[in-house]
Figure: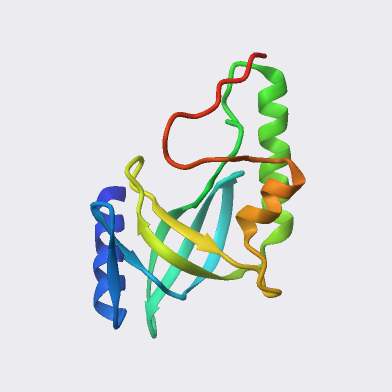
Length: 147
């Protein structure tokens, strides 16, 4: 079901965008696509209601490009605590209205991968990185942390 939502959103974005470029095997939609924040799932994932066209919306999960947050369901208590801090930090940055930029499909879990900018132009991912709440992530192997 999520995969269908992701495919539908990407199709809507591709059709509604006047231009798009190939990014690896996926298509990159430059955006912006306006969205309403439904909830912050964790330190690098949101659930949004995206509006690619006027009066049309679709709910989808969005993973922030370029970062990786600690996992909320980790075995290690310290990792779970760090994950809660990352989620709370992301929640404090966002308002209910956000704009998705550089949107593509994520290879895992049926999410959309996107950049989000704050009203002052700063990248949400960069702010979280600077705060030390998340780590840089390029889509490869994740860093392993001893507990």
